[in-house]
Length: 468
Image (cartoon, rainbow, N blue to C red; front, side, top):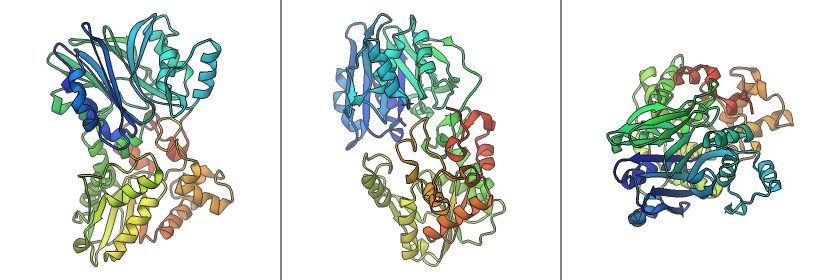
């Protein structure tokens, strides 16, 4: 997915930029980048590969070369960023959190207009440069950004570091968040509100879908009003978001706790305790334990000193290894116990299979799994959670193909909670992984816990409902 951070200050912004960008590291997998601007030294940029290291270790030693009162940073899940452009609109640096599914068509269109691409990522056009080229087709920055909104399929939020402040634009349907923070003498704009507290910024507001603002050290000017329609990604609360981040006024940890609490109501499983799978399942597990009235125990803990989040490595085999190695079961707590484990989701099922096997080997008597969202039936074409995978990598699609002979048949029925097809699919997953029982959160419970109207939330990966 990726995350960005920008700040404009009346004093040097470099320290805030460095730490604010670092606080988005849980969102990205491939590259980090920083750019600053000062009248004395102009634009200064650096980009580093993060696939075998962390943002801080890559950038800390080189911070002294950056200079200025305005800067933007990115933890990128895709391309090398920031890109620096010199155009009729002026010079600017740009970072994006984007998933552009019609990139080849747009690339051809721009090439036919005698434009060219200088930046390549793994031999392909850098989508952030493509966004920049779409912007400079406009007579103003606003007109250019609206050109991006009108041309791309997928999503795109962005920060533009100009010679006169930062321009921030949220995706036209608000699929990814853009959050404004303020402190004395400075403003910040970021993908994650968890970037703000330790840098003394207060969370002021969320930009609306399609809203464009220009941020200065002492004020924010609205350049484009927000759209009414919104499709913010529900998976921000389920998985992506850091626990103390908030989107649209709803805190991630509060959502996870509440969804677990609501889900526990009516669960007649007789267990000894509840455990959340680190990290995303912990909040749900705590809520589940409270709602069910049983203890919460840490039967599995995460080894944090060396193992990153499991989606970080580029290769699937290494992601699977990381997912297995970072979680350590506690035999003393597991022995002879009946346990409910809470986790955020089941995608491929590889991690779940390994976890369940180890839990029984370590003496668990019963292993009940409770999942914080509905089954993932559709790939995501909007922000890149499942978009890089074939639908057949989803465990649900594999089972649908087994039952129907066609992985695309009757998807609406399998996506409908408690339909005969849904129950058969869930039972098959439970049997495949040798679970004592398995339950997924319902769409209704998930939306209730988020606290926004269903029409404002993208649930495409669960029910295929969002428009392209």
